[in-house]
Image (cartoon, rainbow, N blue to C red; front, side):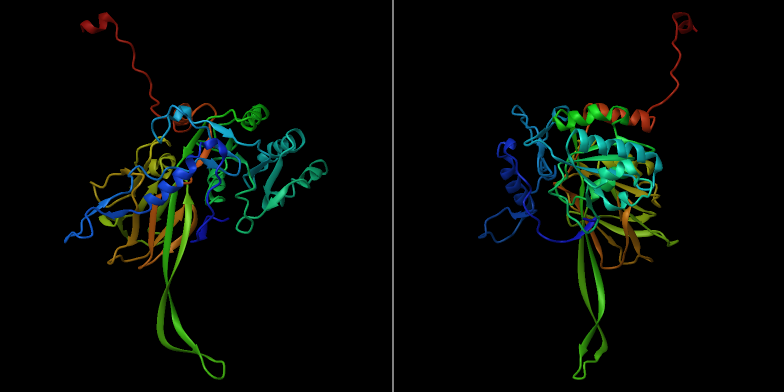
Length: 430
């Protein structure tokens, strides 16, 4: 349930009947894509030559979201990646449950939260899931709203698994609320409807003023979606422990020898993975590998590995370009590199990146995932990053293209400039 989990083999994604049986093919292709290398010559050949069999475009995304939602298939599509304007949400069964996520410790959200929950439970007869720490706010427990809270299904982060119980998600807050919703689901993510009740609101296209009609449209399946790719991150940490044995008297004895063990954690990241120098005053010194080959050593404050969604977050502040969420890509952006020629680069979504401390690094590094789960990276540890096959289906206000450009204009004031005056024919003579 939290942002990271021990490595394990999870259940197969839910497959709905409206996907034309395509999910079975997608899973078989996904298993095929995991084989990154194959022999290009026969076994009888004296020399062995290797070539790529993995698509550089990344894994085919799973198009079932939660237990009941999937993407409406376009029978006329000739490509695996649909036209962004044609990506539509559909339900194979009417949705019955919704997860409402509210920004914690924000008094301005109490009234919208109460109104929405009353509408969902009393008018739409939905099963509402709410996090326990949201209901621990004393301001929520008034006499009128107390009867409604008794109908809620309460869960706790890190302890309760709701991945197969929620049909769709409603977020009340800013972009951080959407990032938090993503961290709750390590595999298939239900469709997310995000209301702009925070500060920036780049990822939250809906206004709360007309929430009733907008939520009704989503329940009826009348909505466009954008599949925001996520990063599958695997952190392998090497730990050293002293060898110990128990003698005949039950005492634990050590002889100074140590043994190493490795612990693997996996995360699903929507915005970016940030590796930085932490509290150290020295430059960060980390090696960056692409498909097993060392491509460069980052010497600076750190490096950002981001999705197209994350390209408009920390990455753009560090000088990167902005990429539309439908573009299958991974962006690598250095943070204050001690080099005049180290520019941000974009690589195909299907590659596998690996980050490790350089052998001659003077200090350790620190890593965070969407700004959370910050931890230290030491010598021998590694961070493996590739595109996840479980995107986040974000519900659009209009469509993926218009919503994105509108966010660029309203939130980042993209290309705002005073217009040049018109030049008349008389002025041209001079």
